[in-house]
Amino acid sequence: MLRAGVEPGPRYAKGYCGGNGFVILLDPDNRVPLSEAAARALCTPHTGLGGDGVLRLVRTARAGVPGLTRSEWFMDCRDPDGSRALMCAPGLGLAARYLTLVGLAPPGRMWIGTRVGDKRAAVGPDGRATMELLPPRVLGPSSATVDGRTLPGTAVSLGNLHLVCLLETPVAYVDLTRDLRLDVADYPRTTGVIVPDVGLSLVNVLPDGRLRVRVHEPGAGARRSCGTAVCAAAAAVQHTAGEWGTTIVESDCGPLSVTLEPNAPTLLSGAAGIAAEGVLDAGWLAAL
Image 1 (cartoon, one colour):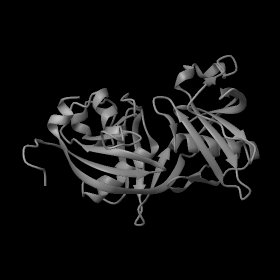
Image 2 (cartoon, rainbow, N blue to C red):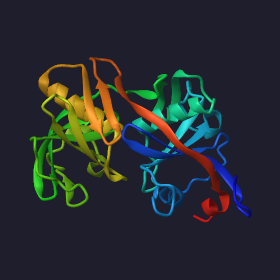
Image 3 (cartoon, one colour):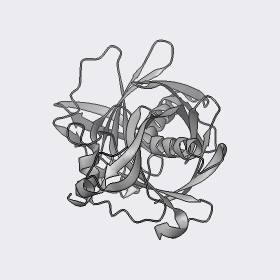
Image 4 (tube, rainbow, N blue to C red):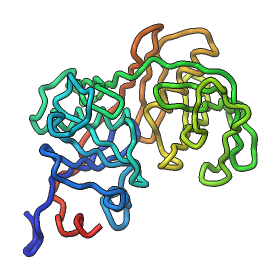
């Protein structure tokens, strides 16, 4: 129940998937003008709801995004700095989990629209979500300078680009909040990529073959996890070993699994859940 004098706004939920937490806004008719300032405020933990991004769910027929032919719902994904993201794999899994829980989509596999087309996700009876992503393309060697250290790595594309740096275990702490630079001259020239749009994954291969991944993302900075970054890390490790299969990646929200097979979609699986639901104050949102 809203307190007296509060103008009800859109429904929201706070949830998690794949090591990341998100704010979901349910906006079926595309009536919520979500500005960059509003998205930033929602992601701010002390004055908003806190999260690694905002997922605004709009019925595809009302979203006005061309090329979406299979999806009933469109996921308008925003990074913590308020900018629009093309896609977010954990966000895709959480959107599927939420739509299933509130009865807006049937359980099982579903299509969800993104800015890079229709993407498929599935929610199992145990609450784990599985997201289908593009097959990885291993592009070649590159490097990054992080915290004053030059780290060799491998460039991998899953629609967006990542530089995967395999580090020795154990490794001295690397501060991802300062002095981050990707080597323009060393990055594979065939990608035509704008270097600041490349994500960075620092990877430790644990003795049992599991991976521990730390991530720096454009528009988000240091993150606890990132779906495509985790998949890129698994792809780089499997490519180096010359063997495809399933890799387990440890995250702050439990283990993630990445399954890779030649000429097949990348499968990313992890726990997804909703921690809270409510209604935003329309006045607070409009003032941003």
